[in-house]
Length: 406
Ligand code: ASP
Image (cartoon, rainbow, N blue to C red; front, side, top):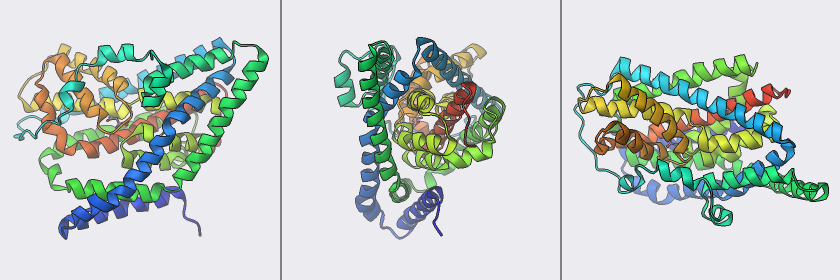
């Protein structure tokens, strides 16, 4: 009997976790972090290798085949409306929970040291807005700057529809061809996912163990419950109402991508698997999935937004600072912006919290409070980020009258 991919990934994940724990008990972490970790790095590098060509080819071929400016506009509008609304729901869920459970009140937590790169990344939202426009698209592509790459690809794809027929066909065929090749490459790399996930989990567990979780238990629980509510109630309700799709079937169709998101903590690195699952198992067209998913992996981060709201207010509570209603509104707004601005890479959300802390005048050192458990929360929130992207593609595809496989 052939085991389905997502089961293999799940087994890899569990075995990795067990091995990581054993390495801490029997003191062979060095073997894990020195040797086994390399396998995880190889897997991550393979995924990263295909991200940029995949994003460029999927966006250009999808936008070019949308045909008209009107369809492009309509799709963009629906996609962004979905992103904003779901992210907003996520933040409100977090806000509500952190105010009810109050995980930071009375907690006596030691500050861990700040990661060196944090202060420099703070307050970059203004610059980030300008950075969307690449001064040299080839440099952006070469350096792997995803947002400017997306911006240029959207424009390039759009203007393909405006050139004379014979160029249009040539270019469309070319980029569609590149996209098909990238998807085949994806399927090849996907086969390595169980082993890659195993190595990543073993490495993470060997490095951090379980003891760091104890003092931050309630905080983690608040984020976890929030993510669960969003992932298991809000999003399913949305796709069954707007997408007329059975959420359980949808979940089964995309579970490999979710497990990969969990292990890599990167929406971008998961994008190849997300695209594959949504096209093959859910049956969303290339036009819609090629447009909605690469954008979603960078812009739509429900889990990150929820986590950021909880974390910022948790820090305020831990410092004994009472936030006014107006300040909480600022937290909600900046959490929305910070989640849009966060890149689809590990720890991006943690870095963006500095933006919120600055906006409401909380000490930046507060980040040190939550550092130790960030990786595990990152894994959880990334899964919710990816789940929301897949739900978005269903909702948009349905609204465009597509017939799905679910
Ligand atoms: N790791 C998350 C992602 O890739 C972003 C974050 O750090 O919240 O979606």
